[in-house]
Amino acid sequence: MANKNNKNAVFSVENLNLWYGDDQALYDINMDITENEVTAIIGPSGCGKSTYLKTLNRMVELVPIVRTSGQIKYRGSNIFDKSYSVEELRTKVGMVFQQPNPFPKSIYENIVYGPKIHGIKDKETLDHIVEKSLKGAALWEEVKDRLHENAYGLSGGQQQRICIARCLAIEPDVILMDEPTSALDPISTLKVEELVQELKKEYSIVIVTHNMQQAARISDKTAFFLNGELVEYSDTNTLFSTPADKRTEDYITGRFG
Amino acid sequence: MVTREQFQDDLNKMTSDIENLANDCVNVFQDSVDALFQNDVEKAQQIIDNDRKFDAEELRINEDAILLIAKQQPVASDLRRIIVAIKISSDLERMADHASNIAKSTLYLGSSNDTEINPIVREMTNKAVEMLNVAITALKSEDISIAKKLAEMDDEVDHLYKQVIESNFETTVNNPQQMHTMMQLAIVARYIERFADHITNIGEQIFYIVKGQTYGLND
Image 1 (cartoon, rainbow over the protein chains, first blue to last red):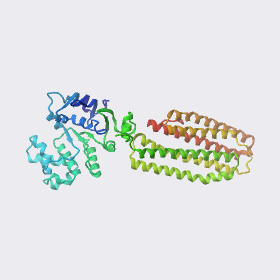
Image 2: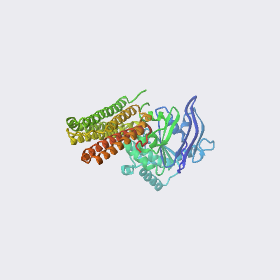
Image 3: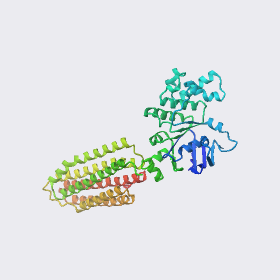
Image 4: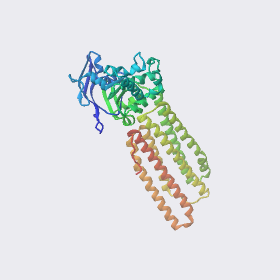
């Protein structure tokens, strides 16, 4: 199931199994994630797609009873190695969540929060990071005159783009998105979708979505998970037109789930 | 758990609409050839007058298909079924046009035509009707092994068509005064041959539904 083409794999997932205590949530996942592409993960609730996503930056380990086997290579190094720095991994692999979760601070402070933790203090450099990140999140024009107002004053769609800008501020390599538009109205959703298309030129994006049309619209590859298994992983065009597995066909045509 | 029951009902209705249109097509086609053999200009005129019903039915199926696409966002085989309904209804509309054209030839020949019509024309007609019934069965069951039979059946129709043309040519050489009639009958044979070609198109569409790729039955 590993994908072989000219682009590099940012992640190579090999024989990944994951348990919450005694309950196995992921079964023997083998899947490469290609750089500068959008990879969508679809599947019914409880299929393991969010678990899988959170494994890619080891955020899943915040649940204490989690165990894993197999390996995930990020740019060639196994992220489960004892010597591997989780902090370094999470700097490179940013995440955007379902509910926009800006800090109760100004727009400006939201963006510079990460860079400041990484020791950047120079005002000019921080100003530059704010402008670049907000432009990258297609939000600069809307907020440039009120950077010091509280981010809570923004609309839901704008707050989600603040979170994307906050993610861009630490210059990640990969952006993980866990249902980033499920709490947004249709127009804000389309704005985030267009943004994702822009972002893939510089970043690799993995997006979990319940919205199959969204997966079809914005992704290059799509993975279908069911009951913790990776059922099918292929070009989005193929998966949504002629899926190989009957279970995929039944799911995307809405016959179950 | 079964979901999208309404959508499934709408898809099933679309298939049964196609089936009904195909059955109407069989009837008008047989009537048009009967009228030809019986010099029945009245029946021929009726067939011509009724052709707009087929045009209207094709439009209606297309409108239903567009609404389903807009409202249900179908993908994969569901989407192919709807696209195929649009294409097959267009083939059936063209096939009804051929029946109407045969009726026009009957009018041209007139009620006093006394030339014996080559019985192979009847044979071609029967074969084409058999083909359309096979195509409908294949469509309903989405069975490509049945659809595959259409290629061979179409070859038989093509073969019969050549026989009609050769025989008409011979008649024309021996009886030049029959040239107009023979030409008209050659045109009729051509309409029947084209009618059968459209049925192979329907067979190809069934391949597309099942496999998601095209397959030539008329090569």
